[in-house]
Image (cartoon, rainbow, N blue to C red; front, side, top):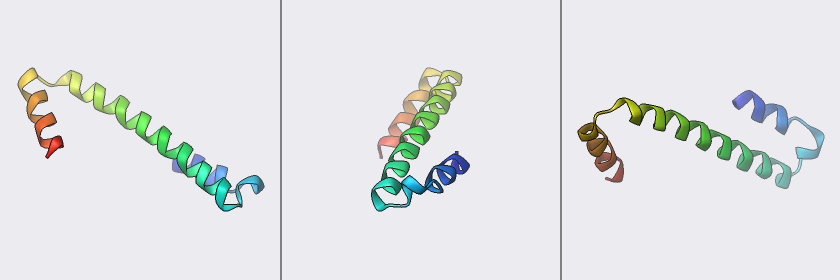
Length: 60
């Protein structure tokens, strides 16, 4: 995904600060989406007690 971000940043319309910020915002949304997909897949592998412990640790 970093390659995609770099490709977007390398386009002339994104040479401005505004263009760069838009690219970074889009990339952040995509990274967050990918992270959530992996997190949900990981949670599906855990036993209920393990899920509870993981969530408690994350809140700290």
